[in-house]
Length: 439
Image (spheres, rainbow, N blue to C red):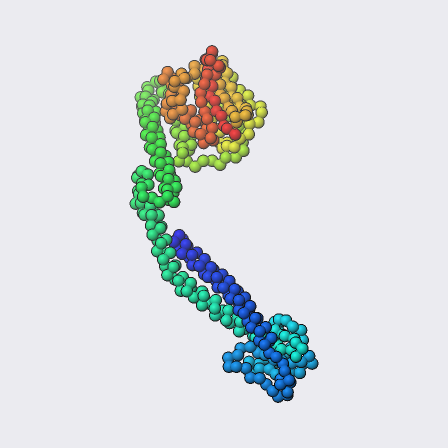
């Protein structure tokens, strides 16, 4: 299991280690540069301080340096004949005798040497020093400078771990609050004494709890409404079955069975609509939206329902010749159009027309289903979109779920649905179910 505190401490240690390595490297480089400047000046001064007189030219004369002298010196002429050289430390074997003034880094026995050559009329003086001596001193100085910081790292890491533990304590406290909740407790988490950094998280959790509460309330209301609405048709089916059993004459028995079949059909339609509405609820997973042509779907639905319309004596048609592309779930859009057309066919009088119009305009994709039925009073047009709600003077068979299903589909597609008169100012009977999908 990943731990925020452990990860923060680990990254802090890595950052400190990397920072300290960088500091030591920079300190070493700066110390080496300063030491090089100082020792180079010393090489120059020593070389220039040596004067080659007649006494140095006598063979066998060797000058012994003072104790602790850490520079190697030798003097020679242009032909390479040595006048003298220090005995300790001595120049390494293989170190060339230069004849030009200046600094040089020369590789000889024992490693690299920094050498300064001074040329004068008296002769040539060469002063050298091992590069390892300078590097050793630079390392020693840089480590001494970084040692206090290295000593402070462990207590600093412990201190930061303690600070992080205290800083993350509110998160632990909130986690315990959430853990203590049970499924039926969906009230929002308290926001008092919550750090500002955790306020967005608490807000999102409270929003999720509110949505869960609303979803569970809707589910309980749906179950209660479904149980109430199913009670009547189930009771009617039981009564019709009893009537069919008691019918003595074949004709009466036929009538009773016909009514039973009608009741079974109504119950089956109710169950189908309830299941469809449950699949469109906020707690149900949404079908993936893909590019679809709403005009093509409308033509397919109209074609599949044309026979039923003819048996009712209604002319069902579609005005959807132009493509109307939009993102959506094809099965849900078919359900939307089917429910609106089915409602229109239920209320349209014999010999009238029901028309499905689909078109694209500047506001988006628009669909309208028009019928010549009695319509719905303007004051009740919003209420009929609720579950199991019907117009006050409606006596046609149905339970009031068609428009609720249509509204659920439209909302899942980010659209808007409303009812209005089929013609302006209500000069003739009819109702228009209008849908607008923006985009």
